[in-house]
Length: 166
Image (cartoon, rainbow, N blue to C red):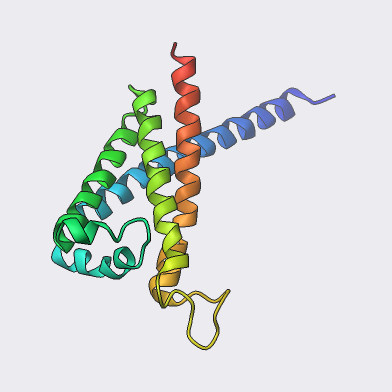
């Protein structure tokens, strides 16, 4: 049988674990928000528009953009979508349904980004090939697998929160 001191220690550890978990959840969610807002804002710069041009041009899902708009305009449109998703995810404390929708938009963003691993020349390190991604663009794109997981978690958590608030 556990003593009072042991029970208090176990409760303290439990509370510490919950505190870390909740802190981590906030870092995960709002880290995703910061990334989407920051990267979305960068899409309004010439260097970012030029930087993603090869990714977009080689994409079977996105290359059409350059036939109807300029490189800069396409980049800005992508940036607007990223910023909207980030702002929507940030509403989680007071509008979890909106946050869930923003998370689903982010899921789409990261699925599209990850498909660049299959469509962009130079993704695999020359002389090595798969499974050795090049530093740019391979490793740069690969990090979006974690961001996809974060967006999926955010969508699920926000949907559960929306159901609880009914």
